[in-house]
Length: 358
Figure 1: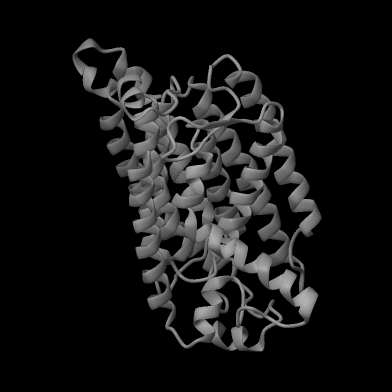
Figure 2: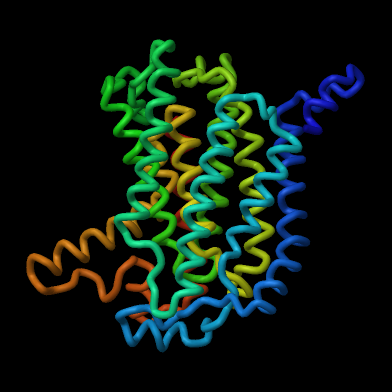
């Protein structure tokens, strides 16, 4: 909205610069998160909307997280509002890619909200069933897959998967691209959700991934930079830098309250949404495979759960002391802040490495 108004004034050409608007988007989202977050946390406490840490099969985890009992949850609403408002202010909202990201933001936000609401209002409930969540996630994934499949088909790189660092090799998967998009959206959404088990862990790693994809989107949207790096040039994708900057700013503002000891948790409202929009951003800029590196912490957390379940089913033994992976280190005696900070360090190094691979 503000972008459209400012860009129409010839003396304010600076507002047409993606880099300038990205800074404004990050700053705006940060302020919204800080001030709206403070008010929202007070409202959550007044309504006694708190996390029930007893809903776990592990008695050890119940003991470790006893102090977190009744900490307000559904704080992901703060991040969603910050991203949404900042994007409407500083993005070109007529950009198709931005509209897809906003659609995904609202879809996953609504899904996470319903899931959290059921957990909070129905005693001993685990929220929506896994099948229900998977159906809603898959439905969105297929919708996005169909839209992008027909849209990207007009480009030479259309349904190709870009393999980082191997410039001459691109895997064309044709119509299977639709299912790949759906799988990626569902997978990333659940991976971030599984990571959200320690104060500041998921939001911190999401901020780092957001910074990386703000850079990647800027490069992909520039014909000169993308040509030099021999990566697909996606016209209009530079606008995603502004969206990702809003994610970073909103995430930093939320981290102010979510860092140890957390005053609020994201809940599924935030974690499912962040995973979904990060996954979609990587798909739009044609760096799906690179997202596996950028989001390496998310992938490791998800894989640890899958391996644990599969190995236990086959052998009745466990690979990890507890899954997801961050709980394994808790069981080894690491303090949660040490786990969080070290995971942030790994996430940052993976993000830097991914930029080198472009």
